[in-house]
Image (cartoon, rainbow over all chains, first blue to last red; front, side, top):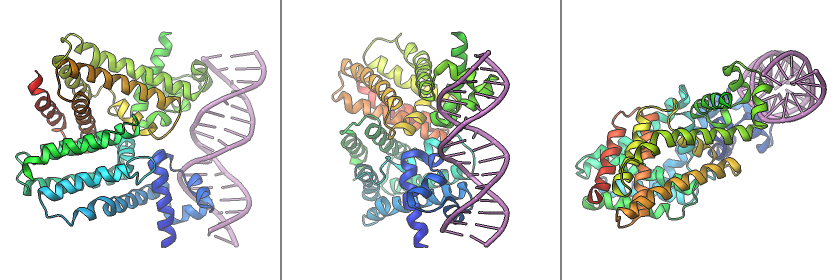
Length: 184
Length: 184
DNA sequence: CCTACCGATCGGTAGG
DNA sequence: CCTACCGATCGGTAGG
């Protein structure tokens, strides 16, 4: 089982750079020093490999962003911790190719199937958790607030990855705090 | 020359769905009813096809978003027209696979080369034009304002494409207007 | 613009 | 986990 986790670590890394479709069984296996069919046997199909890779990325996101924020009380403080934690995770370059989920959702958002379904379900759960905390914080329009906060995360990732804009993270943080200010 | 434009129209459409790498010469040629080598001859390499496709998408973006906004006076009004025009272009589903540039930049932002360079240059020119108008509008921090506006565009595209959130466009517009309000 | 072809790589299978 | 293989498709070339 540890072997599979090692494979998935490399798979997540590769997919953040090349996409979930560019994550090929041949390339992944040769980077790990095992045969194509040896790797293939762990998953059974490319789609299963993609699904397992999304799960592995979600576990990393949980460890890096969600868990640390659970120390804060629910409501405005936790909402802020989620948002700042997300920016910190981008800034630390947890994945070499930028945010795994930004890459994966752009790739699969117009490609129906179980991979898209899983990405959509994960994203919805994340948004719901943000909205729940925005509600507890007494936000006037929780969905609107969360839409804006999530947009700033995506804007920071794009500005960092494509434009090499080193101010992107600070810009996102100050815009977030401006939006959260009255709730804290 | 008209033949090439017809090819590129289909190429932009395909790339917005499948990505610039998923845009294969074989598939594009068969959809257009000509031979692989016949299509290949127009471009000389896959990379040249990708570059020409980015240019074609930029021309569509110019026609759909930039040109209509040029009727507004420079400054706050034009800035708002750019932003609302961008949202309208997403809402009209000008490309079947969502915003061509969102797809292409997520795909190439960690892939060095001339395609990335072209996407980066185009994005930078767009941001500069927004900042220029934000300055003319007397914005306090033009770069910060434009970062936030551009983030909202990307947030709306993602929420529409992955989450099927029908309120995304209206949310983006009201957040934009809140930011632009004092300048108008 | 075409047919015919190249080596490489794809996802996947047979058999061990 | 392996070797050896399958048909399909990739980007690209030769030659017309």
